[in-house]
Length: 172
Image 1 (cartoon, helix red, strand yellow):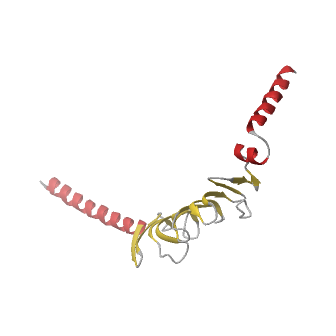
Image 2 (image 1 turned 135 degrees about the vertical axis):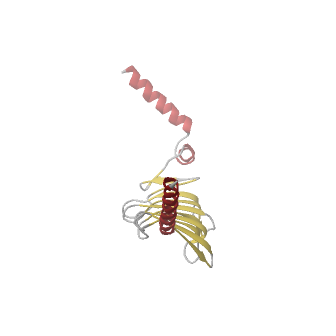
Image 3 (image 1 turned 90 degrees about the vertical axis):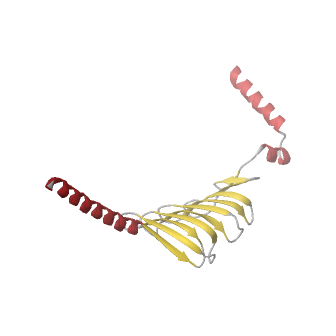
């Protein structure tokens, strides 16, 4: 009987310790905030560095409505941002490099180009981008069949030139 009572007491004490430790850990890893724009949830790693923020934005900067921000080892190292822009009331995703420079940006409705996908070079210039009707790679226009036909040569003429070049190459 002593062993059973001792086992129950030990089990009860262990469960209290486990519950207290779990509560301490979870309060450090997740924080919730009630703001005047809604709520925010922030998650932290075991070193108390913020890893993610999900919630409502204030609308004082580019973002309004809901947003998701992912960090690497602290608030100064934003790597991914997704939200609704105040400029066009549309979705936007921004990816940043290790130096906190925006390198990739996807916007559902940019003011000048509509839906657009940007890649920036090391100088921060958006020298590569793609819209639903045009694009550039490293500052050079992407040429489509329609563009060639409208501005230079018919695509059937291009195909004839390709066929002739292939035929010459095969006969040599």
